[in-house]
Amino acid sequence: MFTLKRGLNLNATDPNYDIKQLAIECATKRMYPDVLSYDKIVDLTGSFKAPMGCRSFLQGWQDPETGEAVNSGRMNLGVITMNLPRTALETRDDQAAFWDLLEQRLAIVKTGLLYRIEQTKQATPKQAPILYQYGAFGKRLGVNDDVDQLFKNSRATISLGYIGLYEVGTVFFGPEWEKNPKAKAFTIKVLQVLDQACKDWEAEYGYHFSVYATPSESLTDTFCQADRKKFGEIADITDKNYYTNSFHYDVRKSPSPFEKIDFEKDYPQYSAGGFIHYCEYPNLKQNPDALETVWDYAYDRIGYLGTNTPIDQCFKCGFQGEFLATAKGYVCPDCGNHDPAQCDVVKRLCGYLGNPNQRPMVHGRQEEINHRVKHLQFSNDAFNTHA
Image 1 (cartoon, rainbow, N blue to C red):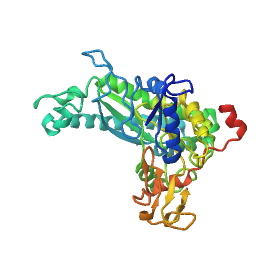
Image 2 (image 1 turned 180 degrees about the horizontal axis):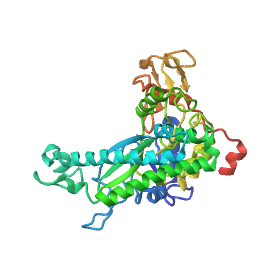
Image 3 (image 1 turned 30 degrees about the vertical axis):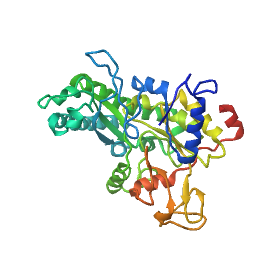
Image 4 (image 1 turned 60 degrees about the vertical axis):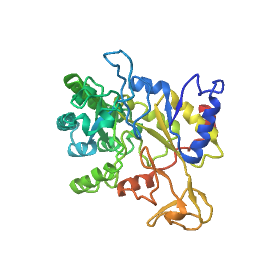
């Protein structure tokens, strides 16, 4: 992670601008660091913090005893993820029925999340002493103390997850719906409904329920394959063999990074429990200014941005760039090498980076990665405009 902050490192006149330049150079070579936009994270989540794992964000919280804002020592109690495309497919001829079924499914999720809370509360401090007795969860509890004091009053979060918003839009508006304002408003309303449900549950039970854009490392495959069996092969939905991560733009399309950011920026405010954006680029090692332009454009628009650029390496012939996706796995385009011991293949799984030659991904996630296209497809005039 690297945090951008206006007045600290964002612009050439800021005192730590030189460190930003090093972060950009590193990202062009190794994809990391991802970047956090300080002001936007505060706006979306209520205070500044880094995410837990690849995207899970705590919400702003003040200790009622001291009045101080607290992030350290807090936790997330778990997540249950909704298969939004299934709800859409089951009601594809009737939008009103979709909203009714969505409410029914939310009631099921609520039951599951409350069960999770009740199970977690049964823990005793001595079962996990580092967490409860020695302060990792922010307080030192006695052997017989109630662990719920660390969870209640919205100190802990618990998450309502979702995937497949693109497929929901496709069910009702067709596969090119991203440029249809009515369709986008429909998908935003889906998240608004989820967000309002979480607010209602929090007011009722005293735990912070949050909407979470699930990484779906495996659910992208599991949900889609289940729906292929139930509904058959449906163009642009189940025929792809994967469901699209969270609120992301269809990975098969090639908007510019600026267009992708502008499209996705309206969703995280209703999904503040966890989110990430990314853009796909060609090799950026010789053009770090292009990446900086995107980072700067994103600063006031989105909170969390990843850089995807080819950094595969063949240790047999020395090739550096992007390997070819084949039936044998990822293959060096120069010498055909695909031996995991002689090549380094790095792809963004969702938030994390992984090596699919060494640790193969589930079929659906591999298909999603194979369908990704580069977003840096704008002219010099467009680049200069944003620069």
